[in-house]
Image (cartoon, rainbow, N blue to C red; front, top):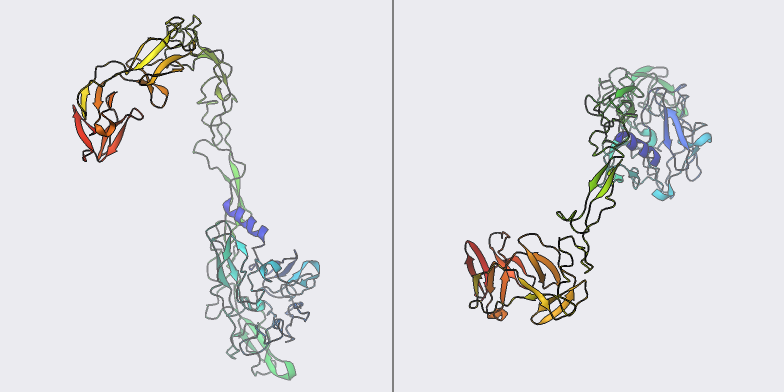
Length: 571
């Protein structure tokens, strides 16, 4: 599936240009105006010249008869695309050369013109947004030595490229190069075109040195004489189905004898998955996993689940890969196991058991309670009911959880004691006092606590609203606050410095701080935290919590042991 999406995206961006095909397969180049040039690979039907197009300056593209140079310099200077021997560059193809048209036209449009656009085959200009470069055709359209620069692509994909005159691409030693899309994001840029061949002056050696589709042009020969010729890659063994052709000595311009184009030959083409060794390397369909368009059954679910419950198999189709070869696409139409949909009655897990793993049966109800443990059925508190839905158990409705005690003769907070904060009469309130530990021991020491709560409770003279209690926040200073929560057994209400209630264990140790904190005395529960190596438990009276402190026993803090527990206190 991923490969197919990449191929479609490349097509959508105009990045795929066909450079392959057999003798009767159409080849197209996507142009910025929406048109396309077309032709066929393989032998030209009549051995004629490629079609003529129009240069950006209006001059005609030269054809096989050696007409005007199709790549004249835009500034009127020297031709930047001249052949290495100084002769004008041409855009002709030999019959049977790559991109040859079925009637000998060169990659022409509707009337055979070169790289024509749409129905009339008119010549196509470059894309102004890319500096005149046509993205996806693998050529250097703006003649700056770079191929498809600034054209977006998918990182990791490859394409064939040729930085020279397009008509020379794939002819004799002017083999195609390759460039790779690089970049770390979703869209990259084409790298340099590497491995491409280039023309050299004709050497009269039986080879097409200047890649114009003609072997040894300009070399003397006897009119009517013939010889074997081959314009495929030099130095590469000719393997089936490729084979040599025949060149005939004919009268050229001015009557000078010269060898004609090589006719009857078959040269390598790009490999396609058609059961033929298109590139003539002795290997048929390398890189092809399957034949284009073929299908097969598929299933990616767990073994033994296909055909069980909702699970069914799908179909895979063989698809062409962007960089050549083929592979199977996504498994379309399959249904694999999924989590159960409770209440649907469908075996979505494909194990033969519909609604397996569902917490309940739809429509059933059960008792529920969201209040603190032990409060259901105490005072005003009672359970509710929850109903099973397709998503599981629904909310708990009709329950009653603990509320703030309001001195109404009822046990609102469900502790088993009605109006426990309303027992002091009309002129006083339940009052929590701080304990005075100033008489315990000398400074900088730890003593065993008395096991009593950290705050005492009585009926004090301060009158608070019936729903509040009085609490001593500092020595002699009281405030009316909401009553403390019900604490579990073994712990008691403690109003801490941060002005909130907390359930703490009773006074288990008494810590006397030194002059650094004005001989402050605090009662604290035993520390339960475990400090890493290098840190020591320290009771932070500011927050009334145990913390781990570094650098104890440094002259300002002493290290004490309370039984087996090391404790750090200020001197």
